[in-house]
Image (cartoon, rainbow, N blue to C red; front, side, top):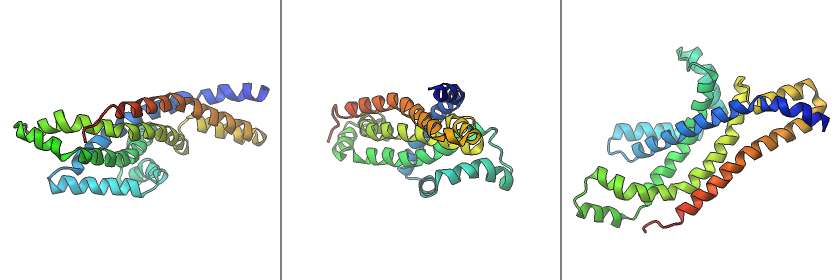
Length: 219
């Protein structure tokens, strides 16, 4: 118990960074998902194929490598400074998961029954009106369960920012383990507890999103 009492306050120092990275990653990640998802459906070949390139690169390479590229390689090779380690961490997580979630956006939109589009066309709706009023609201319900799952995935991914020196929970856990190797089991048990407790509200939200998605989608 004494060891836990000593370790707990130190890990708490990293809680703020973990939450900040998570919130930033969620906002930017979902934004990228919708932008890339809609761009994949564009009739403009340049927009479409540039988006496909982005999606395939970020889905086909490691998030850790992407993080190192944004934090280390871009400034060295191209002189591009992202401004802070926070921005590099958030951008890496958001671009990675945004690429995965963009396929959910695209697939959900394409899954809406063609009859819905035909009915909206018969009512003389423009393409934008069809998407905004008929297709998109139905597609969003299909997206909800998978979007909820990615919330939890992004929480777990925040632990990677410790690799670029950000003072998150895992960063302080590694410091404690380095200072006293015998405490490693206790340290990483508490790190696990921290992430699990933070995941609980996200798990609850995911279940709510799954329930909402079952309330009816036209087929």
